[in-house]
Length: 364
Ligand code: NAP
Ligand code: F7E
Image 1 (spheres, rainbow, N blue to C red):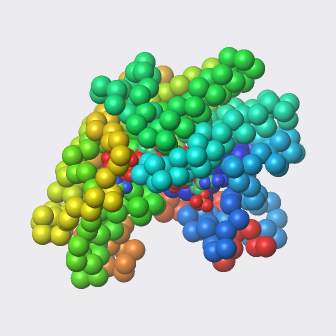
Image 2: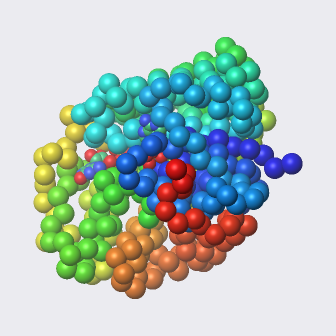
């Protein structure tokens, strides 16, 4: 019998890739989406099936992590085998502007889902989307044994979610596991995160649609990987015999400046001619250096990322060129086709799904 999964944050970068992965593994997938006045399902529209279709395997439910009102009933009625809790206010800079809201959605949101599982009385496996931001100023490389020292309301909220996940494991013997994921990016990354902001700007500058790119701190170092590989890691974490916590990352760190150099030079542009500082993008407290020690995941999950920094940049620039209607230079596309057999839509992995329905995914 096929398994059933519930995903919070299904409309986000990771939620969309995870949905494709699970549908490809024959799961029935349920996702929670927020009611919005405009369509907010762009990342999953290509795999969504018409609500009237028979035997569909992707189902969406309205809900918001700021209230627990319907989660217990939803989970009790659905009886999922696995819950991937990915929903969050996930922007670090924004979390300084809305610290209370971030604590509510990103921190307490985790407790609301855990408590709903406990109250529903069902047995299921729970994944918490933890973050390298929890390490903050801890000395790199960071592993599962590194003490947390968050530097933002977002990081602090994720530390709370992490320990609640551990607590439900210890107190109620729930299979609740933390993934501590370092930055992972893709053509589906939100446009205000620095990697996508850069690759989108490179494509627009190349085609004359933009002349300047305003950024903040260029010295911060991040361990950037490719998102589809990280959702595979989430799935592996929930397939282990016992629940535990795992760091996922590439083991390579680069500065934002390195990213600029790599992205602009791919199209023979010099980033210094286009990039200017805007202090609004600086953070009250910065995380300077994140570098994953993912040796436990390599050993126990057999998880090893195949896409590294330089390849990631090329994939993202190619995709952003394509998104504005320009034939990509093609190196990034060739890398993905060689390593995964497909370009970034992963259409083949969900080939069993019906044609995507046009318009609003919930259809109401
Ligand atoms: P993302 O693209 O920002 O997606 C966040 C998702 O959460 C979206 O589906 C969003 O819905 C949903 N959401 C936000 N507020 C909500 C609310 N109040 N109620 C219900 N849903 C809400 O994030 P991501 O990059 O996919 O990351 C997935 C998870 O991993 C997040 O928890 C993030 O904090 C964590 N994480 C990410 C990274 C990374 O590098 N990407 C690394 C470590 C951890 P809308 O589409 O309606 O906005
Ligand atoms: O910033 C610097 C910024 O916003 C990366 C989230 O997915 O990963 C993400 O958080 C670095 C920082 O990602 C701009 O100061 C410079 O040092 O792309 P980001 P993040 O803060 O690392 C972690 C693992 C998560 O869990 C989060 O959910 O880039 N930077 N100039 C800038 N950053 C942004 N956004 N915009 C700039 O203009």
